[in-house]
Length: 204
Image 1 (cartoon, rainbow, N blue to C red):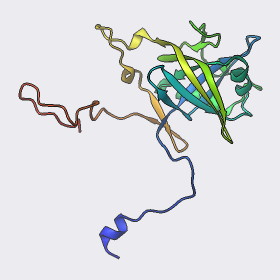
Image 2: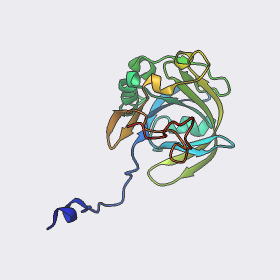
Image 3: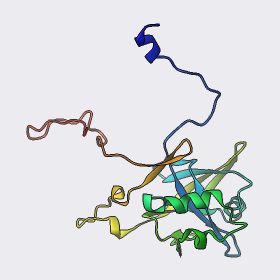
Image 4: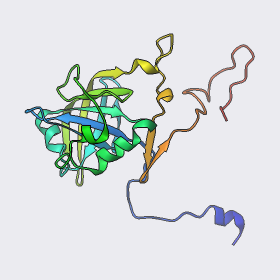
């Protein structure tokens, strides 16, 4: 077999979720009695800009799922390298057995628009209200509108620009948590014109 042919070989696997990497987020929620919990979710993503909407997919047997169904509210809290152990704990332990706030060393903070608490230690908190619940099989997808966004001033520069990269966000890929690498380009750089004689190129 020629080397070129060997390099181009691909194995076919059974159908599965191989859309990686994904954000590893902590989702906080509450029931009508005020009981709260945190679960870690990787099946999440942006679905619409206007109105701002996102989705999370949760297994129905998760302790948090009935809470979200009951109130129709939750908060997506972005995770950082500093918080990755807390995020993992909130994904492998159940709120039926432990107080995840205490176990993970996280601090609940009142939301501005929803009754579910924010996680104070996270750099970004997205308060959401469910608009549609879709049972899909192993997971229930919650399509939700973002009704409020909170960002930590620690990651803002003197001009008021927010730098999420300073907080060192993490992603999830095939069972592992990973730090993000360096920026290698900005949106539109591939078609940007030269400015003042400077050459536009990748940041590699």
